[in-house]
Figure 1 (tube, rainbow, N blue to C red):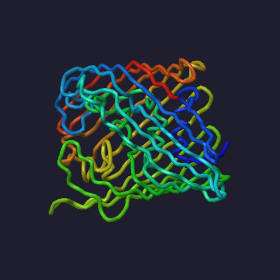
Figure 2 (figure 1 turned 30 degrees about the vertical axis):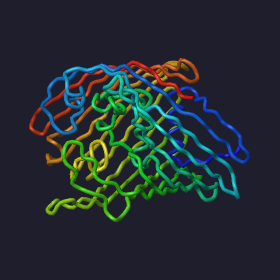
Figure 3 (figure 1 turned 180 degrees about the horizontal axis):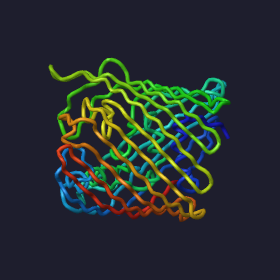
Length: 390
């Protein structure tokens, strides 16, 4: 079979999934010099949430507006943190280079209508790579970002739900610990380079990303992308049972209106993962101006800090249990925050591998949002369902 090349953080996508379930059953088809791979996932979860407070504005994930979709309680049968998706790739070894092309097409499960078409198609990935053992790997196309990848891809709720925020689960996905532990890794048009893994255990990922506009949720857009690209970088160290990383990203934004303060997003990240036998431990910290609660500059020129910690224990070959905690906080009460000071979520979960393809999930969690002026919102939620990888 032809050798496939994946960048280190693309490989971590597959590694995170493999750590949570039995090997997926993707199909490989040989066609001349090429190996075509077809795989994907389908998932669905029953979630029920109950909210109290309704006093905190902005991106308050524990409030009635977002957490319960405008009500004091709500039920949804929809996607978890992952959308359902079909991923197709083709790989080969040509002229001394390992080459690969991949397209990932994703769709959501839950809508508010029983008759309207579900036409929300999300093409998160469409890229190709080339490289070899001496050169490393170069990637061109649309893919996930480098910054934040280790946090979300090693989150136990990646194959579950995490914070069952109804405003996002209906029509898209749940949030895991996005906005309550880490900012989303996002999707970008990009040119990225990954070095070969060095004998010392270090590797480097560098990304030149297509600049993006701000992504406000509670206020009008105030910034647009500038003429310079977004830059992302990550230094990773892997040695035995330990993996550690240090990352950064930056982008210049142009104000849309005169008098709006200039904004240059600058963010850093540090984290570590320890996996030994039945025990898994994870900690990750992000901090920066323009980092946002959910995504790039979604609150404008605000400094935010995200902290995420997790512990898991493998009870048996089939059952894994864990607890994860995330906290996201704004440093100042700027207009873009809508009065939100912080979100926090704790999730307790059990993940049972029914067979080599299906994982059944049960989670319970509590989400709390705090306002700068003293308001408190709370959301309690449960999630029951499962995911199949093929």
